[in-house]
Amino acid sequence: MRTLFLVVLYTGLCCSGSNQESIDTLMNNVLVLRVSDGEGSIVYVPLTCGEAYENQPVFWKKNGEVQPALQGNQVKVLVEEMDGGNYTCYLGPEGEYLNHTVILIQLEPDNRTVILEEKSPEEGHIHCAAPNYKGSFHCAWTKTSSRSNAAVLLVKAERHLENISCELNADGSGVYCQDASCPYKEEQHRIFLTIYIHSNARLEAYTKAFYLREIVRPAKLPNLHSSDGKAFSWDYPDSWEKPCTFFGLQYQVKVVHSGHSCHSEQHIVMDTIVEKTFVVNVKARKYVFCVRAQDKHTSGPFSPWSHCIVTKQQVEC
Ligand SMILES: *[C@@H]1O[C@H](CO)[C@@H](O)[C@H](O)[C@H]1NC(C)=O
Ligand SMILES: *[C@@H]1O[C@H](CO)[C@@H](O)[C@H](O)[C@H]1NC(C)=O
Ligand SMILES: *[C@@H]1O[C@H](CO)[C@@H](O)[C@H](O)[C@H]1NC(C)=O
Ligand SMILES: *[C@@H]1O[C@H](CO)[C@@H](O)[C@H](O)[C@H]1NC(C)=O
Image 1 (cartoon, rainbow, N blue to C red):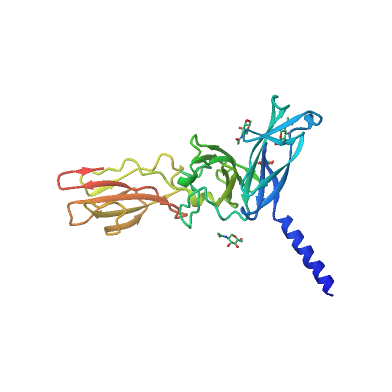
Image 2: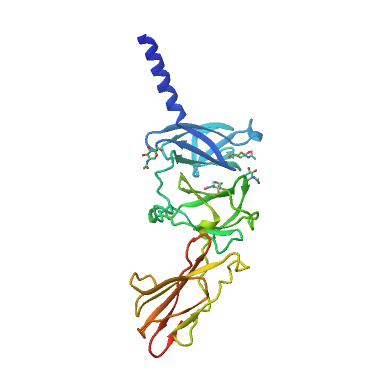
């Protein structure tokens, strides 16, 4: 009985250890080593320079430094903790460059992230917004100051088996994406956006899942004006979907004390309307008129505020 128990225990120990690591190809020339803990892990990773170099004198460098112990087309490299890198192979000790493999390390579960700043607990690390329902959207993130060298390796966006094409900003702080199959279809499935970003050999993956309707944010209302400081009117944003009757907007109007910003909690008037005009009926002769828009049907995100400053002498919008 006791022997059996020990055998079972031993089997359990042996296998839980080896199950904690995995090696996957993330993209061409990039291997990801997933480990459950960055401390104390030691993993041998097999590398191949290329099938064509099987019987050639292949020499290896790691991050540009010669590794005398690594020779031959197929080698096993020892990766301790977060010590990955760029392994390049050459034909002979001083020979021509043949190929390379980058080994990155990702902690699993990937919930101890350090590269991107969290925007808020609700929003997570990635902020996405769309100006309308046509299928294009923008997502942005912020690197923590201690990881400003981090670089985006790969961006994947998909909705229910369909890929969405995205283009990285020049400075790597966001992407523009276009869901080509989107317009005028009932939105049943979420969009999943995943950013693979690495700082040295540390790889982190950030995923955001959302419906387009949750991120559609109308642009700032244009052409806000008033001739008398009482009756105000404005236009639809150019970027908003037409026909206006189907994709309707509603407006939050707010009158705040002179000198206050539109974000002020102390308002004199606050109302939600669907017309593109509003008449202010207050005793005060100095105030700030504010208005912003929101999708009427989804009550999604608000546009930025537009405002006019009203004084006795003039109206400035
Ligand atoms: C170079 O290495 C990669 C693995 O990082 C491998 O997939 C690819 O086939 C190699 N290229 C050649 C030309 O052998
Ligand atoms: C790895 O080294 C190769 C060869 O020098 C280079 O082309 C490649 O850009 C490097 N990759 C990274 C991620 O440093
Ligand atoms: C990460 O997730 C694991 C299991 O999913 C959990 O036990 C651990 O507490 C989490 N760590 C943090 C820092 O949230
Ligand atoms: C989406 O992209 C992946 C690679 O990221 C590819 O394997 C897959 O075939 C693509 N799917 C479609 C429907 O194009």
